[in-house]
Length: 119
Image (tube, rainbow, N blue to C red; front, side, top):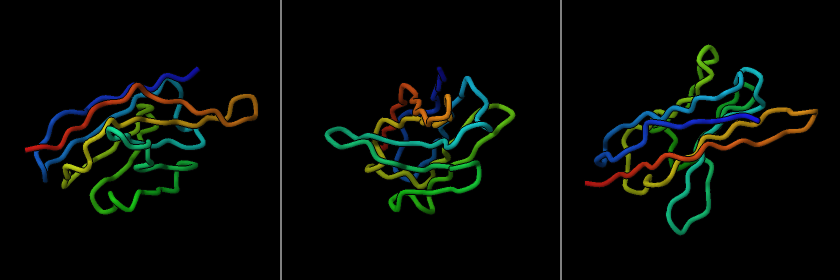
């Protein structure tokens, strides 16, 4: 079992910045992928940003140029730097990690952290 613990959410004004952190209980260097997802009220969970095989980064079109995903293997932590935040970025943000477990890919999720962008 892998535990993921997010932190860094909160209330921020439009145009502001936040950095989310996700601490993993297992070495993320052994992960297949790590990423951030979000879910706004009444909407489905959507992909925000992912890093696959430690190298390939992908972003949702809505956050390209504003958000940056990164990882620190020494700290087993994944980050999401969010700049130029907009009200439509308001959502619960979830950390995700995928590991090979007994030869198959297994998904793990954090508990989520609320991000609210409002004046």
